[in-house]
Length: 149
Ligand SMILES: CC(C)(COP(=O)(O)OP(=O)(O)OC[C@H]1O[C@@H](n2cnc3c(N)ncnc32)[C@H](O)[C@@H]1OP(=O)(O)O)[C@@H](O)C(=O)NCCC(=O)NCCS
Image (cartoon, rainbow, N blue to C red; front, side):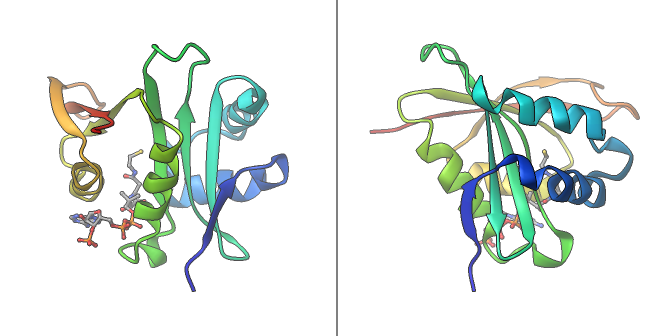
């Protein structure tokens, strides 16, 4: 069964923070950082969760209220055992549906083939590169999406 994609509510905080730790290990956001994200839901954050009874994936967007300002996709992840079943795509579809008429930017490690594959499939193009940006020296790639009509 495909999970339902829905906006996160505060009751999802613990499950999302826990899944973030599974997905990102040392690079996971702290519980305090996640609390900050959830506090900003009323301001400029959109957090989507893939809900199949448990949280199987999530996406975090910074959506500034001024529509000419770019949206940033801050994070997207799917539980390791559920990857490659379309959930990342479902989250992206739902995220981009909220970005009509806007520009979306993201930053991704140059070696993250799965994420770059996912973004490329949704029409994100590489616009620049930050050399040696990450700890360990990996480059960051900046990708941009604009709705094509
Ligand atoms: C990136 C990520 C969210 C993709 O989620 P997913 O649920 O596996 O993605 P989907 O099954 O919807 O795949 C959609 C498309 O993405 C691309 N893709 C996904 N995984 C891929 C991989 N391992 N290699 C190449 N392309 C891949 C493919 O184009 C795929 O379409 P296809 O299966 O029809 O070929 C997931 O791999 C993940 O959680 N990674 C760890 C967290 C992370 O690095 N997030 C990004 C930085 S914030």
